[in-house]
Image 1 (cartoon, rainbow, N blue to C red):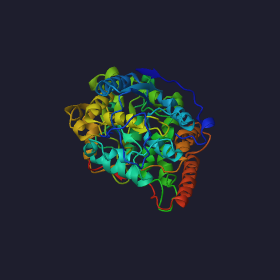
Image 2 (image 1 turned 90 degrees about the horizontal axis):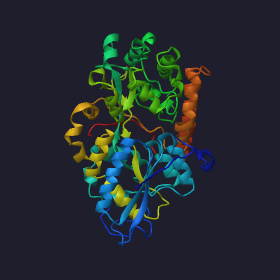
Image 3 (image 1 turned 45 degrees about the vertical axis):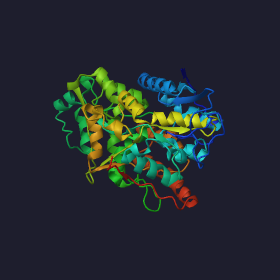
Image 4 (image 1 turned 90 degrees about the vertical axis):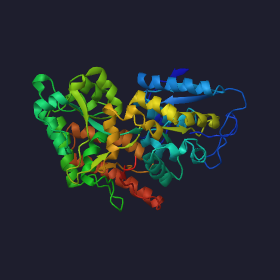
Length: 468
């Protein structure tokens, strides 16, 4: 049932730009593909079994368990459809999908990370789904945040359609060694980002081989810095004219303090190469005392640390206005490839993936927040470490990050440009101010060009998360 796919990065050569439901009708899965604007006719095939490919872009044993159970249940209920399950490691996933998209060979059902939507829509690689979504059995069961923000604000308002059905809600918290924090006198009950930076210094004890925090210097290095920059800008990336504000004097000051954690030895020297796996392993192995990550990491901690050694603290609030600026999005999303020859069958699988039944399996296994209300009401999400993440949505000071932009170049910024500039700063090859100026110049140029070509599209703004 499962075929693993391991790929090499060929995306720059193959593609010009490099980044970063339940239809109820009948229709043959092998018939004419449905266009985004037509009425969906998804339903049973004419009796002949069709095979559709589904690719998970964050390969892990935990995710495999969830998907294998979900696929087995789906195939039992839909004997006319067989799922060919493929996986690709996260660090190779974007390159792999760009290569497949540019050659018209994407899997029928593909996972699209929220930061890739703009690129994939502009490239014409994925289908619009609104017509099919209109007939989805559980369309009214999506949480308010999913409907109002992830569908309306993030997709319909920008692209005129829904292209990706979210798999689950993902947001960040600070994993912290409670025993280290107690020894160092760190109070994280109602802290700010400056408190966080001071805590990283206090919890560093190199004689005990302890470092204050897991610093991400490899892939997505810029992303971790954005938490501190947004708290200075009120969640804004641009002013009303499209000028990037991430290089303001206040941003330069907080970014300098952040980079100094690396330069002053509050995180290991080889953290300059750390990505997701390395920064998490450093925390769970007892090398670092704090980790800014999502709820998916809870299981790793439970396997390596005792309950009295760690907890998940709320994300620090802004020193400026007391609000919590957090990345709140879906962890991945399900889309139908434009090149698929079995779009109706692909939609039926997405329907099932997005149902409360499948959502409970997927989110409980992967420790994610469901997008379906019925699944979210399960006791599992009301108790334990997961409750802390869900509780964040009931606070009136939580603000979700805006998009960096809707221009095609956002992928290049996320996946190559920004990380390279942050690494130069970590190496001392350029100052924090020079680094932010380069990031701001890139975003300003891309945003203003996009505004000129698309004058009706609004500037990306932070989003209220109230009404989960």
